[in-house]
Image 1 (cartoon, rainbow, N blue to C red):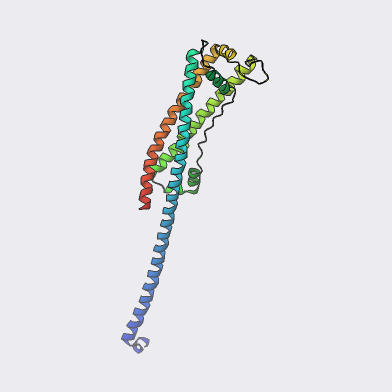
Image 2 (cartoon, rainbow, N blue to C red):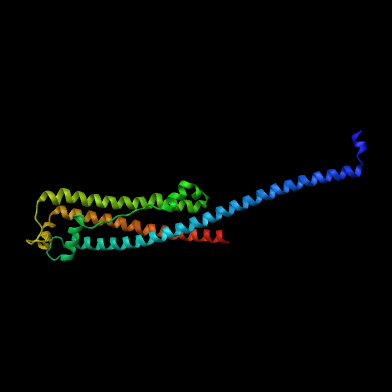
Length: 240
């Protein structure tokens, strides 16, 4: 028989050899798999670090934008409140009258863009879901709830101004400019014009809306503060 022809020592040597080859192949595959898994985890970690840093950069730009807008809102509210209180008198500063006329006639532009290329790309690419749940929820609240509502308030303010300009100022056909070659506002004429009751309601409406804008601005800054703390802590963990 074949088994009898092979000496036991040689048989065991062959068995050990084949076993060693199987073990080596198994270890090679396992090590290769583990190495590839480690590389994938490293790539994911690098992508998450890059994403977190990019979001923080976007947040920094947003924070500056909100600071500028808050300053503008405070100025608006101050001017509108002064005009509201002194509308029936003739002691409104010419600078405030000129400002209000420019605002109503669309010479003052304001725009708020809630779009974040980083957040949108991460959401569509799936990387956003790799972030911790708490940070994901904060980002969703910021970019899908608070900032779009901020934009909505801006749009409503602009619509109110446009509607008033087209339905009150234009049809009235009141000439509010000085008799000169250049189209320059006559502050005295405009001061009398805004004494109409419709202007009082309109100025109050603008001021209340702007107070809502300022309130949401400050709330969004607090959201940014909380999100920044969480993101920086997460980023530090990734870099360890």
